[in-house]
Image 1 (cartoon, rainbow, N blue to C red):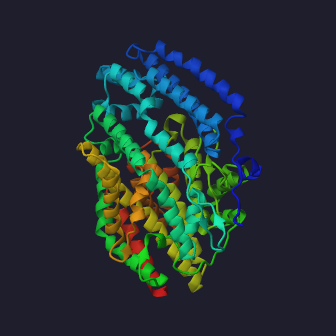
Image 2 (cartoon, rainbow, N blue to C red; image 1 turned 45 degrees about the horizontal axis):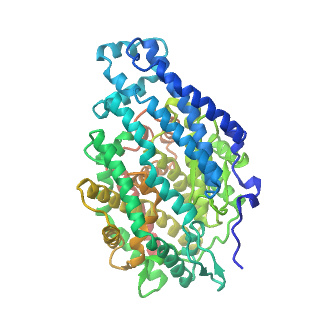
Image 3 (cartoon, helix red, strand yellow; image 1 turned 90 degrees about the vertical axis):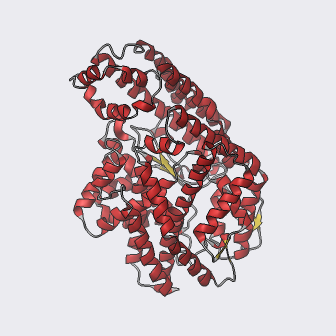
Length: 598
């Protein structure tokens, strides 16, 4: 019989994250909730008075910062507890209450930005030079002033703040639908036994050497989304309309410009990525042709994309072994980095295995003043070992940033987040390749690395193209029906995978299951992230101590500089196509070696 998925209560404590490090229990959460609820009223003492003196301005900014730090802990605790079992109503309610309280705080504090921007430039300049502590907020004020033309009156800012809770519906609906409600038809596993299909198990089935299992899992997954495709098209479109609405309200040229502006990223970086990857699609087509040849199939289907094209040399990898592999692979980062990694392993930063109702996928998150946390759905594959390395890259980035920066600047932008995680993956795979001369194992590892490029650089850029098109359609007033969405998604798959790929009709529904589309213009950063990570990790492995030292300064930087400036510390300039070209050059080199081995 196939292994039954455990309930949350059946999971061993040692395999779960320790949420008591964040808050002792739910009672402590309730106490913190009441504390914040009472403190929110204090915003009133500052409203209308920010121009009075430097001391009043500083006191307001300090109070806002401290309240935000408490609010972060309140929300993260509720959300992570909810993610342990998304069907548990208690934590759903706590998360909703935390979100509502956060929206109330945003509404009450909405006056801050427009009031600051309305202060006479000469007066504000004088305030910023005061020695009362306000210089702590100098970088924050610079970022704020840069967005002056996109900031509305205090009445309009308050109105927008009030609207946030109402406009979160599409994302919330999709989250619960995708994690708690949707069910997939069972399949027969490799032994001919009935097996449940879940988000956590899906990739394992897609890596099965039994083509029937792959095909059945593929059809099971997408048949479920097809049943709800019109609902999901409406939900997706509503989320885009929300994004477009706020971009228009703030007078941005597009929702893409608004999203990238939040991370201080020029739109040209996005365009460079899509254009550079588009130019190199023949490399992806070469890889597809190699895959078809290696699998010896008359037609290569979409469900053939994840099975290793050489025999699995790794077998099932227990989690303890995964930790050892990751630690050895990250040795070039030095003893301090490894000691922090071990601290996370030893002190229950990680929620390891899948359980019923647990949020799918993986992430690293947390709250300032507490160690970071990592959610996994570890399944013993080599891919899940790399997921561990990836998420611990995020976690240690947060660890370094939180210890080097005050709360105001500790939260790094998403754009740079994927660099730290993907750099870990790059170091790990190159360590494994360095340690083996065995042709079979080398081919297996090369296949994995090529798969990383396929999934992270090519596929995420395809997602980025799709997302850009979808938002542009809405901005032009075009209808995004399920039929239109599926047709465009099919077209992009044909472009990216090339003539040797049979683009199955089921894949047309894949857009409907991508959670990151509900965080507009997020996915492109995976592709820019791997590009920057390859550039940095290559130099670290070559023994470039200046780059390694600069890389740690980058990790410690938080948002104390723009993402572009931070990456320059690690020797990477994302203003140019060069990092993307360097990553694609490595892909081409590895592909050439793989073509000789297979």
